[in-house]
Amino acid sequence: MREIVMDTETTGFDPKTGDRMVEIGCVELINHMPTGRTYHQYINPERDMPEGAFAVHGLSAEFLKDFPTFKEIAQDFLDFIGTDKLVIHNAGFDVPFLNAELGWCNKPQIPMERAIDTLLIARKKFPGAGNSLDALCRRYGIDNAHRTLHGALLDSEILADVYLELIGGRQPDLVLGGGEKQTEAKVPDETWRPRPRPKALASRITDEERAAHDAFVEKLGDKAIWKKFAPN
Image 1 (cartoon, rainbow, N blue to C red):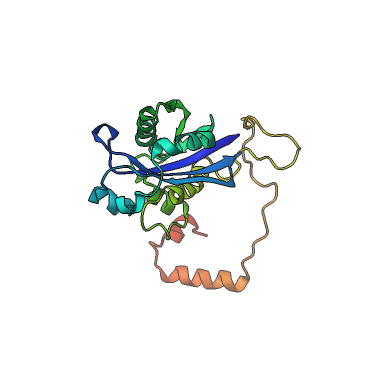
Image 2 (spheres, rainbow, N blue to C red):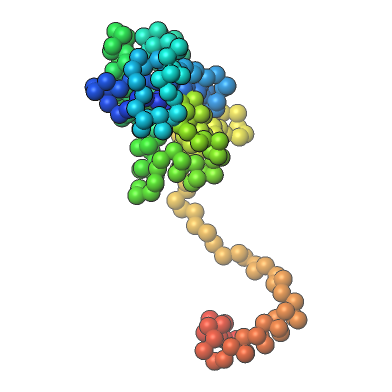
């Protein structure tokens, strides 16, 4: 199973008001494992860079002016993603932006159902908690110390780690032993219940330790909670 983890950077929030895409980063997963194949491209937006957007990703119009336009890289991008699922954090932002760019160069649109939105997964799994990429990195102990600015490829690599944690860790369908891939979780035997040990384990407390504890409890007085639950 092939999936593409991806992220984009833009000049703003709305392509309908003239905002454009300035960077795309993609990471290929096969059976939930990174293969090392990536796609990364800076894009000339053919417009100025608002200060707010520059503060987020650090990409200036001057830096981007010598890179290709989206129209020039559109087919290479589509060839890389193929028809596979796209793993995106907040797909409601990236997919419409991609489709706007694709529409302007008469390329096929990306159906929203192709997107696996990790933001929606995180909100369902951690309702009411912070579910930004940085917050999820902190929650799962993923090192993102090198992420001082947003960058599409770096964020895609980080998101790949976050996605694998959200779905249960790397290779969640891996089964050790038996030689067969597990397709459905086994239903536990509802008749099984934990039962007392037939024979209690031998105490590891020495007589000296027991005497010292009894002396300590005695000093606590008659209202000591130990005397309520273990009066003898």
